[in-house]
Amino acid sequence: MADTIPAQNTARWQEAWVGWLETERRFSAPTLDAYQRDFEIYLSFLAAHNAALVPPDRAIFRQFLAEQQQQHSRATIARRISSLRSFFRFGSKRNLFEIDDISWMKAPKQPHQIPKTIDSLNMEQLLNAVFRRPVADWQKDRDFAVLMLLYGVGLRISEALSLTAADMPLGDWITITGKGSKDRDVPVLAVVAEAVNKAAASCPFQPEGGSALFRSSRGAPLNARAVQRLVEQLRVSLDLPAHITPHALRHAFATELLGNGGDLRAIQQLLGHESLSTTQRYTHVNTAKLAALHEDIHPRARTK
Image (tube, rainbow, N blue to C red):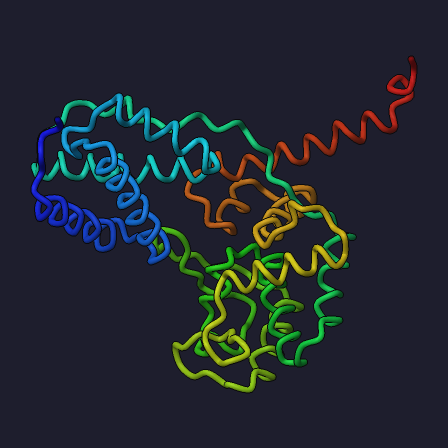
């Protein structure tokens, strides 16, 4: 039978860890929620298997990993393991408990994936379809503005929805607080600024100061799930590929810039990527297009 750890110890350790993630690592609220949820899932698994939290058991961890692989995507599992490693590293460094090396606590390797993007024709169809939806005109203006921020400025959903009434009227530049609470200044195309300012003017709720700019039909701040549902509905109505999601609009922004001679480090700064290697994934998109073009037009490619 596994050693018993008092429940109050686990709760105390978890509280200290979450506080550190929030104040020192400056994790966003959604990331904090995800990490806490991951930890609770692991605790439930341990309880079901009568296993101790500390020290972590390699065999139990492998069982946990096997169960997760049957139920979740690689990305979810990778984040879940990252959450657990963060907790154990924190506890060890703060002398909350003693553990040996946890280098064996690894998520399965993820295959190298080329970001899926949207071509300009499909993007045009998507944007035009916004105005054919059976909703109020102000909602059409709002939805168009949000999509333009993703595609025209390269913002994440959370970044686009973080705009407030104080940011209006939108000008040539805007300061965005991205992952890790890091600020970056990004240029705004005139057509994007026009769309956002129009949405702000037509919104019947007229938020003020630091309150959220984009609002739901009931006046609450618009959430990310609503934007995801919007793109899903538009995609289905147009019979577009399943990979077209709000994040794919951000990919399209990056590949468009890169394909037109944009500097990789400049694109890194615009996207708010901490690592250049993350931005470099977009070079593979262009390489793939180049290979397809070569295959299509080179006379030797058609010989049998």
